[in-house]
Image (spheres, rainbow, N blue to C red):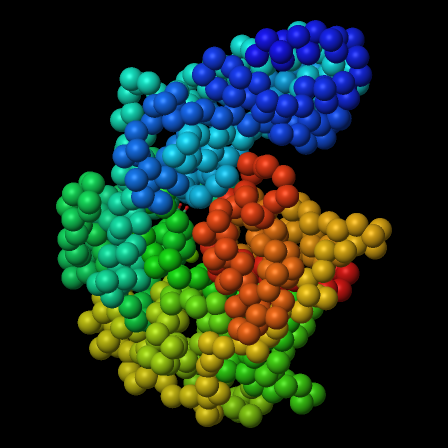
Length: 561
Ligand code: ADP
Ligand code: MG
């Protein structure tokens, strides 16, 4: 610490690049500060620092990280504690560019595995960004001193040192997250695909604010679908269990159908205490399926849904740079099957009508041989019975699906009612295929073509640039994730981009093709941690799901757009 103070004195009045002389590691009273990379430009991404604390100093008991999921929940908690302490103690902007800021990467309402705070038996490491202060392009040593010797120790003291301090909030989050993971495993055992606990709060404050709508109507399960379960920490709870099969959510407009489905989409993740969805869980293999017109499709067999197109164009190995609503939704289903999905979540609001239904009058007017599309209606039962893929479908506008549903949930003033029996009486006969169907397959013949997954740009450099949570520049290619709705954090996008490159470098010739190569890469990261994805020590990566990784690979757009 003294050495750092001395070094700072020697650079007074110098240019910003003089900060580079601070490179190295310094022992403070309770922690060690390391400058992992010092930025030479106050306008660029701030310098990367890490703080390491030995186990004896941080005082966090082993019980908080005794399982993998508890450890993830604890690391998440600590990163949020650091973020909160930053808000409390860091003065913020002083000088040019980012000068004076300190940051740590944290998630929104979800609890994700990240690499901002990492714990192991030897201790704890927190990775932060710290923008060393500048006056124009020169150093501001007095401000740097304030950041390093006043603010930083206060942050560490409050967020990362717990000798004798209260750990109630830590245990609350860790236990609750473990309960959610447990509930998801239990779901699998009892043959369910989703569970929504009574008193959950599903609506959000707004489309851009993912926190709970406090004055919302709490969830109340219908008696016929109610189920009791005893969680390891919280104890007994009750809620609505959605079994495997085909489930419809119906009801008038504005009665909460999409809100329920959206909560189920997010139920693949664990949530913070008091999120309102902390006891809403969905199968970890549930995938949202929607129309996504204009997406790129590369060599996908969409023939089970879309037959030969006008001009005798085959759809067995279909590629396009600009898909229609129905072909994109068909490709989304086939690709999700290939990646191992076990439940589709579908909302009429975001579906292509001609992919979902075709009514009898239209079938008389447009003959089967004139219509390449086989709507999902005709194949949704087969997907369940032969491929084991359940569906939860919001369908308020068409009664056709009543005939193929195992159960029907009516949303009435945000309150679910089981109307399965009534629906069965109205349903009529199950519709039969207008023409013989082409079988589904979970196998894809697509290979990982490393020429396609190439990060080499025209200027000779390798470049992977995450522009936003939903936009990746992958070398000269683009990946548009704007309608991959179960991606929730830009840190996941960063990891996805790196995983694609990692898979292309190592597993090009995987016997199971593209999906197999991505699976192998994904498992490497699960086992060895997010750090294997980056050449330098960084703290901004978050673990994606396998399905969103595959979704990104499938959306690679090779032509300049
Ligand atoms: P639908 O899909 O049935 O048309 P939405 O799910 O879009 O309806 O919900 C309509 C509106 O009602 C949204 O603004 C949503 O935030 C709100 N909402 C949904 N569920 C609840 C609830 N449980 N309590 C209060 N407001 C809700
Ligand atoms: Mg809706």
